Image (tube, rainbow, N blue to C red):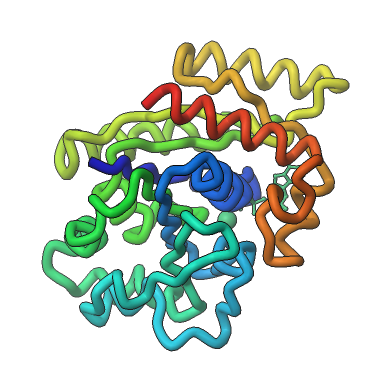
Length: 253
Ligand code: ADP
Ligand code: MG
């Protein structure tokens, strides 16, 4: 059975989308069948994989709100074994519209039932908030990957996130566990990055991935070409570390 991993942190700009796109691409490149679900109305994971999010006939919004089958919104990407369920700005209304639906936290989980066995991994790129979109992701998932930026206030909001994860585990999805914590945008030349890494390791102990993602300008350029790093610049440090992370994730499975 496939594994479903929500990539979550309610802080914006910590590397959720960069990790969603590049980890998905690397795991697919290693031969696994992967689906990436874009649950952020900004649609950055979609455009980062070359999807023209302003000209979609349908997207994950239609799955959540209009009862459309997820099969009908999935599209291929430039990486053979990687598919994506894209998002457009329509999704911005969904967290409010979901409030009126019954079993509103379970809608994504139900929608994934028919396809989850077709994939080895399903990753969900979450929005920067703990809203109903994120809640749907946490209920559908069996693991949470938490990217943490190696910056000031890195752990700010983390206890709120952990409370939410524990609440979901207790009342909505007992299968949910922290899959791993990923240090991102690390700069080994600064004491700050090193301090943050130490703090994160103290808080999460064995859950922290050995692979640490450094700051790499190629990683920030790739999205504007609609390409994951392993296509945009396969020889870059960014490609190397996300491939290393992919292997670590597979090994932990
Ligand atoms: P989130 O999805 O959590 O909001 P993003 O993945 O969009 O975060 O990253 C925020 C910004 O930082 C983006 O402009 C992205 O290109 C850039 N970025 C992310 N990871 C790295 C990295 N390792 N090195 C350099 N820039 C990065
Ligand atoms: Mg994002």
